[in-house]
Image (cartoon, rainbow, N blue to C red; front, top):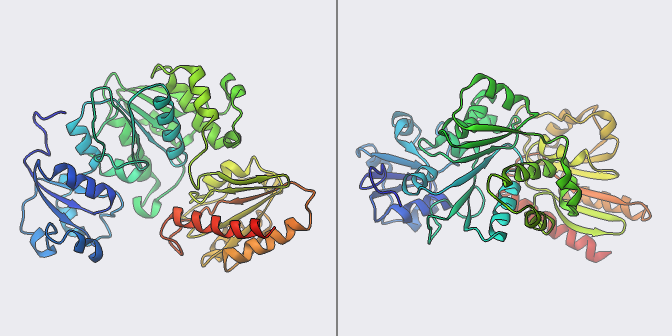
Length: 431
C-alpha cells in the first residue's frame, strides 16, 4: 500500500453519493481521514444519520477532496453550484484506489462490450491461477476488495462518467473497445464523450500499453490528433484470426462478442496467458445476465435476453447475425441515436416496439423496417408467440434488445431483464 504523499490521507473529505461506490469509499477512508457524507436521497440519509452533513454546513467547510459517485451529474444535482466552485477537488474511488495501491491494472472502456470483455479476461486470469479482482462498473466497487497483495491484478470496467471525474487514476493496460454516440444527454456533445473515454489513454505513462479498435472512425480521429505515451496496439476486429476456429460457444455468434474476444486474444500474450487454457475459459463462458443471454433454446425457438442494450448500435451487433427474428425494443431512446442497418439486413427480422416512448422509436425506424407498436411488453409477446405457434416447423428467434434506457418503467436494466424472464417463463410453461 502506498502511503507517502498520499493525497487522501489525513484530509478533510466529502463523499457525495452513497451508492455502492460511495459507501465503500467511506468504509475505506473513515479511519484514514476526516470524512463527511452527503446524498440527495432522503431515505439513504436516514441510514447514515450520524455521519451525514447538512446542506447548509457544506458551504462552511473547506474540504481538501470531494469524492463523487459517477452517477451524479454535476450540472443537475443538489450540490451543483458548490461542485462547480470546487471542481478541481473532485475525485472518484478509482483515484483513491490508485493513490493507495501500485498494482497492475487492466482498465476496459468503450460504448459496448465492457462488462463481457472484463468478465472473460478476469475468468481467464483466475483460471490461470492469477489473483485477479473484477472491479468498477462490474463486480465489486473499487475500494471494497480485501487481502490485496503485490501480485493482485485489478480488472476494471470504467464508464465515461468515472473516467470524466477521475483526476489521478491511471492504468498500465488500457482498452477502448469501440466508441459510438452515447450519454450525450450527460456529456452534452459527442466530443466531450470521446474526450472522457480518452482520458484513459491520456493519463498513461511510458511503459504502458493501450489497445483500441482499428476500424473505428472516432477512435482513429482522436489518436491522430493527440500524443500518447503508451504503446498503442490497433486491434483488427473484422478479420478474425485462427483462434476463432477453436471456439464452439454460441455466445460468440454475434460480431460484437467476437470483437470483444479479439481484444482478449490480443492482450493475452502481453499478460503471458496460456492460449490453450484461454480457449477453454472462452468455451465455458456462459455470458452475463441480460447481456445477449440465451435464456431458452429448443428445436424451433431461441430466446435472447439483451436488456442491457440501451442504444441501436448495441442491438445491431447481434441483429446483423440473426434470421427469422422478432426484435422487441422500447424504453427511452437516446438523444440523436440512429439505426444503421441496411434495408436488406432488416428484412431478416420484424420489430415490436413497446412502452411510453414507442412513437419516438416509430419515427426513428420509419421506412427502415417492418414495425408494430404496443403499449405493454406483454402485448408484444402475446402476438409474437401466437405467430410462432402457428408455424412450429420454422426456427424462430425472440430477441429482447430494448435499444433504450430502462428508467421509463424500471429501476435499471437488471429489473427490466428480470421482468422479461418472468413473462417468458409463463409462456414456456404454458406450452
